[in-house]
Length: 416
Image 1 (cartoon, rainbow, N blue to C red):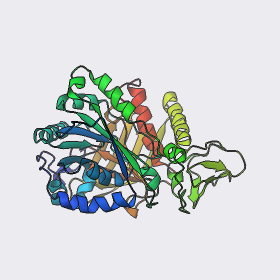
Image 2 (cartoon, helix red, strand yellow):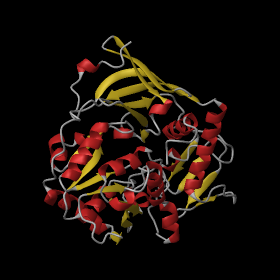
Image 3 (tube, rainbow, N blue to C red):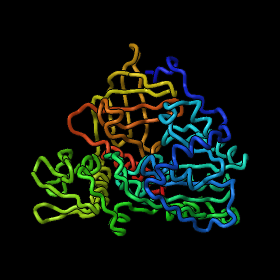
């Protein structure tokens, strides 16, 4: 059985060296109006004397992240690591403005070489190490390879941690709420410090820098969101009812979140807090509900019972020209990892991703508005968008299971 009919497709040239950034004026034109609209305040700490080249890690909650970083790094040249689907806009344009293509959650030394070239050019290398938008405005898992990358590049390590971007435009409902946001830009390690540290010590510093919680930030700063549909879509993240424990029956509309199985409902306040309409509130803080779901998935993994299977629609994205329909296939996600088996042009194929090969996975809610929610699996040469067609499922649970399976496989090692 073939892994995939590779000969049919021309693949994106990942080895092509990154260009030094041009068209900075265009980036500014596209970015600065939104930055001004949201009254973005960027506080710089320990940045005295820090000039390019340096490595910049940014947390990832919304498209606004890219625009704020453009302001934070102005007027210097930058090169940013961007996922393959970003290049669908225009490969020429994205290469010209300095983007480096990478397929999510793959180990790719080519990207490291590109980042080294950026540093050698005297520019800023920008990485979004979480590799996906946060699902509920809190930090995601980070790969253990970051420490090694920092030591290899041996330049100042700077972070930009954005606050409010998830509240303004959450991954589960991208409507811009128009709120004010803020960011902190900080040099967290300098070369003389890096030279005395091992990978684990560097990872610990990065992990500490990437602790954030947008909903807590909203409540602490009393940021009011009066958007009437502020809870709509939240059931995509909060897929399990904490009252009756039923999965996949949560729904949302306007400011209400409810379970269609038991009838319990919650109201989301203008300050991002939940309250049970029956007077009993299991989780006031949204990320606490999310982490409770994680604990439940972890129990399934620990007991060896986690499993999901569904007929799926598979779309391939081998290059920046567009998606290729591979038709229907069977997806299995269990204690052994991911397996997709299908037939394309009368040739059977398989996509296999063992547990140890993925510390996390990327998901999308109602991706492109066509086939519903999806996960995407990546090899070094292709990206597969996989849409389950079963009636009841949650890609959020699949993402949580991927992370818990990885931690279980490595005994908790290999992530920070």
